[in-house]
Length: 369
Image (cartoon, rainbow, N blue to C red):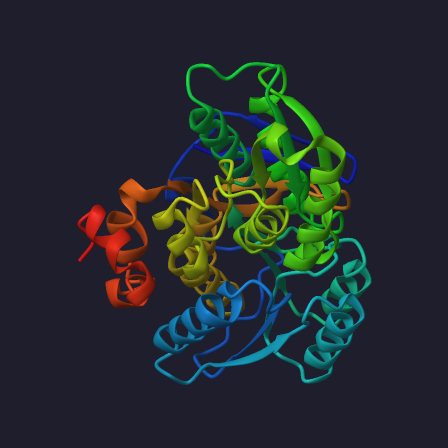
């Protein structure tokens, strides 16, 4: 199925349209295809921050290994992390342009602010593939997870956590991600599509830079406004912020925590799920995303158009570009019940990583060994 997803600054909408499926629709040549290169290529990888442990722990090393395997270890990855600084990322992008890398894979700190840099890369003849977040500007391709589906999964899980007695009188807090991240708008839209009319959203925050400490401060504000005992559940867009939310609730003297959602399957979150401090996370297969991004980048720069088209059967629109070739990777709700079949089975974590001394009893309860 070919999907078309429109992404805007003010709001996000998703529509699905049927079209031909499969590589039979791919063409063997393209008027704007990059000149064919061999295995001796340089791929630039720009990641946005380190507060979320996934980028350094998973995305970069998996991406690098895949590029090397696709190029007989002749290809190299030039890597930079912006540490949540949009200006720093703009400089890193310019450095890669100056270094004349062959292709750039970009996870934008600020999707709008980076547009000029993307245009500069385009002017220099360097393809740019948006990774995880859809940057503005003349992007050649995009790979991410189905972000509205992430929000829907979180919203459904939150309702599930409240049980059959969930009602519009139940007060919840929404802790959304950064306003500069287009993904955050999609997560929020997906969650609201499920939650509206089912519960009362008493407080909603767009959390600056996705930082756990900012989420903690926001949650403290919500507790003071609503009352800790009246908060039935908390929608948290990711695991890092969920950690900050837990700290705020515990500082307010809450001993029986309300259900809290998350995303990214961070190790600390998996352990919180084991002990009941966090209800769920959204597991996204970082190996699948990172490896597919590497395949797209290598195929693009080597002029392998059929392979590239097969990897990008979806289509998305950004505020500045239409019909961007894309790949949307599916997601899974991670709960206590499926830790073994998700993050352990995919070798994201070993059982020994999860079941440290403080968590051995919780692991034994679900027979995680």
